[in-house]
Amino acid sequence: MLYYAMVFLVIALIAGVLGFGGIAGVSVEIAKILFFVFLALVVITFVAGLFRRSSH
Image (cartoon, rainbow, N blue to C red):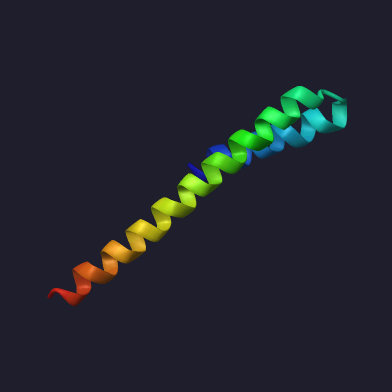
């Protein structure tokens, strides 16, 4: 998922350089959403790992 966030970020940067403002804005928003979803999944996985270790 982080890969897709980076892809959309690169698309946004290229579109911004070429002057496609609408495409760049949408790509940035998609990249932000994917990044925060990835971040949430990392935190959930980390917390679940802590609970799994403490129960053994």
